[in-house]
Length: 300
Ligand SMILES: NC(=O)c1ccc[n+]([C@@H]2O[C@H](COP(=O)([O-])OP(=O)(O)OC[C@H]3O[C@@H](n4cnc5c(N)ncnc54)[C@H](OP(=O)(O)O)[C@@H]3O)[C@@H](O)[C@H]2O)c1
Image (cartoon, rainbow, N blue to C red; front, side, top):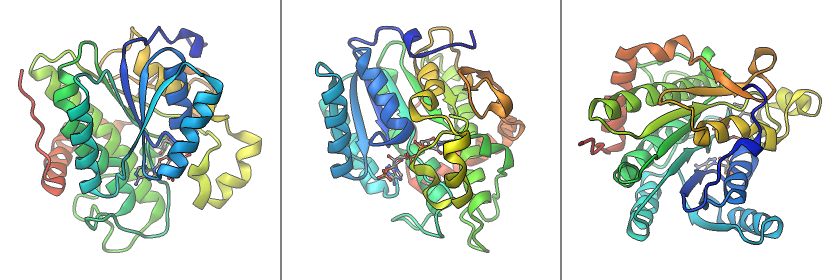
């Protein structure tokens, strides 16, 4: 089914979703589409003013939408823990945990805990968030964790001897590493969940080339956006399919069906070869636990 559209999203009434980075771009469209299908969606945003504006935009278009806003800054593990604790205290289910937020090729910068920003936000922050919320996800029938990666994962490699690019920051290799880390996380989390007989599915998606704020610091892509890029509602479809297609299996990855997976409706695509390195997946998991201090409660 390569013409999958938002009309294929099953009814989500009664389901609870979190979308990180939902104030703009692909995250915003993901949150809006899920709310349109009846899900109760929490927009997890670092900037509350932008988050409030996003909630207002959704409610103006969908007066019956049930959307909430909570602060989450993935570049600060304290914020991740506060968000997760508050969410766990106020909810007894989490059907969809959508790890969408991301930064791409910023000038060299660090998270609050001193991690390279892209590895810290795109991978470590989401790793910590998932670990903190997994008990809730595991208590929910038919729950999914959805990770938003990128075709840039294909140019990434895991620099285990210098994960934080302390010996010289290179923005694109750091972005590629963070997006490869997203895929290795999918593989390892799915494997660990399957090993304990959990029914939770971990799926992945990438939006091809979609015109969003992501290209704010990557001049050439921003310049070419009007000519080549998809618009955010279409860019959100792979994520929405990974989150809601009843046929999706744990470990499935969805991306646009067109030329070089840059645009088009979502179809199943292959994880990059480097994401199939089980040794790297396990090594990254251990390092991520050490760096974040988050241990996953993976019991049957
Ligand atoms: N657009 C593409 O062509 C493309 C291609 C491949 C992969 N992707 C992936 O798609 C995902 C969504 O990107 P997008 O294109 O929609 O970009 P976007 O419009 O820039 O949205 C990114 C979102 O992440 C949020 N964010 C950034 N740093 C954060 C932090 N420290 N804590 C919490 N939230 C944070 C942003 O918040 P602010 O608004 O406050 O900055 C924004 O809401 C990313 O994972 C990206 O890597 C996009």
